[in-house]
Image (cartoon, rainbow, N blue to C red; front, side, top):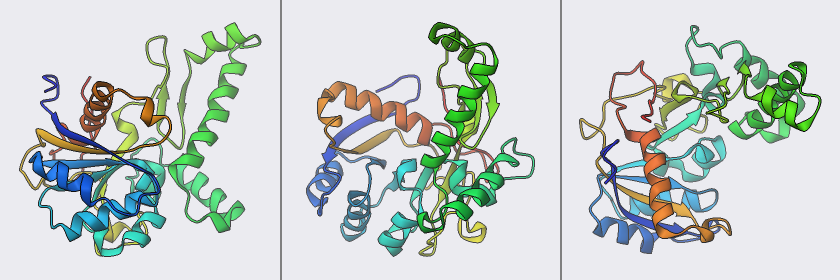
Length: 262
């Protein structure tokens, strides 16, 4: 149990990114009696999990990371994706954010330019946004006098930049720079094949099926070559960090955003 967020990972299961069945992992998670399940994997296993989840008629809320917040997953999963909650950077829901959002100018520009230059790649996702922002953050660091590697490192620690991924406030104590205002909690509904369809997506928060944030979490993560290096305790800690972002203190009404706790 993590006392700071009140979430316990009751079971953590690995799944291969190319898996064709998730019944074994989900059955083990079911035996641990969680209140919600967090899935942190990529296609095609992300789709496999969603379909197996519905086939087993599991009763708890299903959460996915931002890697699945895209039309490909929603199209492949079909009705199995209905009701799934995603925490994602706003590039995935660019046309659903409010006019008062500080990213409102950057996101439509990026989304339009991306669609024009890369029409075969479909709607813009969060991953292109990471590279886009990295160039501008680097440019600002160079403009601040980062001529050498040491000077650039120091300059980057003072960058404030509003981009596609969020508002970066980089400092000596925070090299990531993004806060909880960079993410949205969204829900797939009605077999939706696009996260940006406002009438089918609940951007922000809706009422929790539990009436409160889950305190017992099942965790299903991709067993990539990097993930295999993780010790079980570290995997559990990773789940707690993820669950903090996803489910802790999120029931605040439809206009609120997903919050994190330090």
